[in-house]
Length: 274
Picture 1: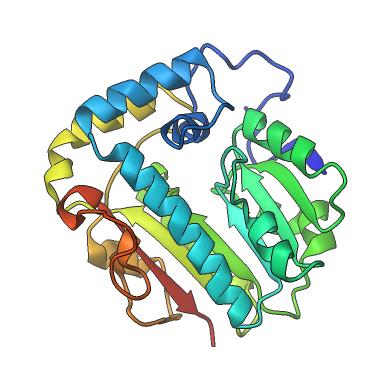
Picture 2: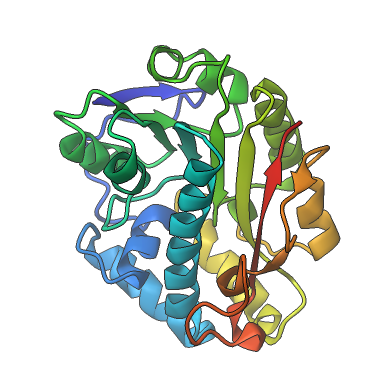
């Protein structure tokens, strides 16, 4: 199912409009992953990003792998419903594929600001009554939580897995911290939140200004890394699951793949709400 109502952001148009000339953060990410749901402008932006940060493709793949491991962890913990905000373009290893392979009626709500991403998700989910995609802006959490599609699928009396993977570095502080605080407050006890985020303490930081300029030309206003302490703030009063906040390819039990922490520039953690 798909909803293009543009929750919380009046500037979002219909998915039938021509978005091919302006790159989007979701489609750049898809291009980095080697997907085919992107346009020439997105591929050109991805090339520019790789020129500034050669490990950008590796970081995208590491984020995707972390998403897979996070969903598996939450399933093991008994979570049966997921809210994926900033879900991006559908590609192999979507949350509903991971979850419903193990639990047939696991429920998944995808949220993304990009109407093209939501349109593609809707095509994939056409016959899936336990998953939906909603076009929305995470800066307006009340509108997301009140949306009919979200309320239909997510039971507020049962634990929810909130997924904020590789998206908060696109949201300015004044919007990001209050929005995440409200989302966490809405989660029932026993819920989990998974976050991966660009960290500003590596060699890749030297490209920060160029990256920010590149993303200012897309559907987001900025792309800014934060320090580890700033990233930990997003978890609020949740208890970080061991090993805590680590390099994204090292969660939860050491290096997964061949990623180099010096190049990775992304950290990740999962928190549990008591």
